[in-house]
Length: 610
Image (cartoon, rainbow, N blue to C red; front, top):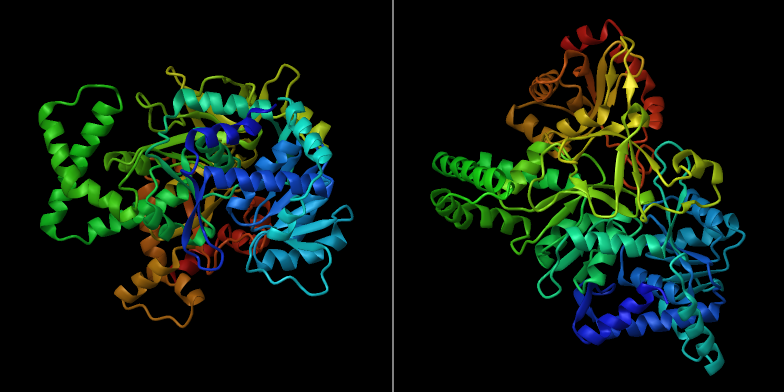
């Protein structure tokens, strides 16, 4: 029997009626709890309903919904049936969802809100194998003429009256589960092509849970994790499974746009996230600091100096903190740092894993200075999430930590990071040639990431191989480094670096529209619409100065020479971003080709000055 089938009964015996999950009720939107006993009861009903539906060993089914407890209930119900969940990002288009349903061969689809339900009705025409839709959200209105959709409760009820023979067959199926059984099919976000199904088996996750246990400490009595990223993201899925494995309570955020409210209400002790969340925290806290009175600014400056010395010079390196510094720190902890964390909503803090993109050293240092334990890490869908992360002591800025136990790492051609472990995927579903390109016969996985390993065994990422480009002068540019640097600025929301086969580096910049409007108001800049504002010479000059300040320590050939401020965001709906908010550079290069070409026109700089 697979360990994840045994997990729920084991935790029920240990925790019983203690809270397992917390989530928003669909109708009232109030937070409510589900105990371990209640969790198991729903999983058992779901497993029976899947069996009654005709789910066979190794069959796949899809979930197209926002985060909700029913996702985890279906996952564990699937494990009892030796079936395979296939998550679809809630932000996916109909065509993206159809591709995953068809590629995976799924016959059953669970959907979320009314919009997902309406999209599901069009999927039957695009997905010949699809037989049944189940709407998870109880507020969804199912059309009167729809005979292919069941509500969540109707679906669960189909398994309530299984015969003794059927129950025995389901029990046998559970017991027949082996580590080589496929556990998940996770589709990549597809920055350069169509998404590929990453095959992860139970042995991958078993190894992953063990390895994290050697590096990451969580407390089943005091910790409360808030799920921020979608469960279709391997980082959130792996982290949540680790929390459940260790009996940590999990609060499930339904709407990503509500995350700031959810954090303040739940007050999590731990939460995995991407760097953008902490970039916004950093900007907000610094804005508050900058607007403080002169006397308070002096206090804050001294507090940050003491916090940096205590937490980064001594604590980080396992050194005893001098008594005077510790006393000063405890004073500032009470007067400044506690208040900062309380304002964010994380006064009860343990650790906050961060991965998915590059994290600015300046922001990492600041967060540790104020006592927020950011654990920077690195991993892929193909590696069952984490390959490396910060250790409790000895971590270094500019790195993603050392490998967690169970991993081997080396640097290959073109400085590519290669890894090997029991956590490496089986391969890409139905794509043997793609699998052969990245997975060597001896188990080494080509990550596609450039990097280096220092004398401490810490990994430093430089960029994605496919994102690296060379200027016409023969200089290699790593765009993510500069993009990460600039997006910590309060006026910059998104940036894409341009320069492949060009004379110099340029950029497309999406501003923080609220901030540039505030700048316009403060400087009495009149404009009739946002397009006129982003083309304002005063705004452009201000942003140019800030950009130059960020890149002053970079080589001249790496620096942005020209840029355009755009009047709208890059978005998923236009295909410019993936569901994990990664930039599709080819799409952006094509869509903004006239603007990009103009930046390399001899008259461009003169026009901007005029």
